[in-house]
Image (tube, rainbow, N blue to C red):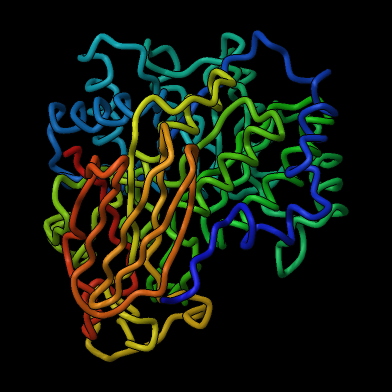
Length: 450
């Protein structure tokens, strides 16, 4: 039997040893700046370029996406717009999204995340939907975020909006200075000093391991909260970029474990908001939207190749979303989720979806050939993982557990037994093989009740 690890004891040890995150000191230190009246909200980063049903997605189809997000505890979509007037499909899809939100008669909101747009375009975009009833408003003003940017760029649209009596609550993501763009204490302090006019800060965390993103969120969030600003923390499931703009790279997040670390960091630093990064970025495999199938190549006409189900990442987040919003840590029912890649890391993939030449992404050496599970148990139980011809049995206490075992080629099967009775069971939708047809993506799944 291969080594089994539990994140609580092994994987996170280096951070836990002297960490404010682990000790809870951050929460105590920030108590004075976190008001009980501040609502805790969860958003999802929505790529307006890439609806599940493509550019021709109907209002009804987009409403179905919103309903799915709402059912998992998401309060709003952050609409990432990398174009507006030059590519009319962005404006067209945005219009349909606002119509979809309005048609549901619920409290689901939308707000913009400007991505490199010219300042006059940002003004036009925000102005068009400024008064819409489904625009998320904070302190009476629409929320506006960004991906990247700087002070000069931001002032070039914030000032005209102010002059037009259309002020916004501005919570951007800006990279720190330097070629490496590292969030050192010095760089964070400079960001805060140079951007005192902003209402808060968003850390766009996706391209990194779960531990790296959690650590960055810990540092960044603590600093901005101490400065008396809003903090929007990132929570991301996984990242496998493709070769466009030299982005063929991958980061290990050990199934749901990395996402759980990011939730815990957001809670520990007293973030008011969390943004799930992302709802539907197919190109970087960071999506959490339920595709309705274990694998599909029908998204965007198959442009991104075979996409695997990530639905369990959001399903497993239910516990953390409730904890984040209410402060209550409670397990209402037994649940088991699994996560694994469909081939060993030694099998090359493709740097582009339709590429034919085998290639290894940057960071492939950090991938782990393991099956990962996350269990939420109301009482002690025995978990069995059958990976190919290997069988692993784990005696687990009540609570939340993130575990992993070395995988073997073949079918993957899972079960939970309590008092001699199987209470949860399920099979991975696909076996692990020597064919890397899923291109390093993770497959997720959830056990059924027996």
